Length: 153
Image (cartoon, rainbow, N blue to C red; front, top):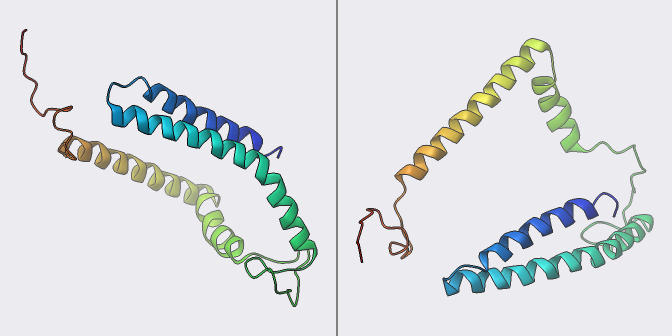
């Protein structure tokens, strides 16, 4: 719980504040959706805080009994001991791919970091261009008109 409580609390607080701010809208669909979402965030937070320790305890008991992950009614033939089992993802993704490219020699690292930065800037630019070309849809034309017209009353 020491590793989980702070991030879950901060995320839930930010989400709850955002939905609480949406409650001041004049559009019924917006504030009713925000109210339902706020209730959901609060109940989900309470469920995570109260159920997570119980799930961890049950999982620790399952591991100690040598049971499988998904088919927990079956026992593992060769239960791996701690530290001996090499995970395929760690071996392939980290040791063979990520570490040599991103954390390797200075020249390789600079080249990879430059590619990552250029890719980030390119994706950001495509996103900016795409949002400027998007047309208003879903019946929201009344709220976001494409042409502003000044109408004095």
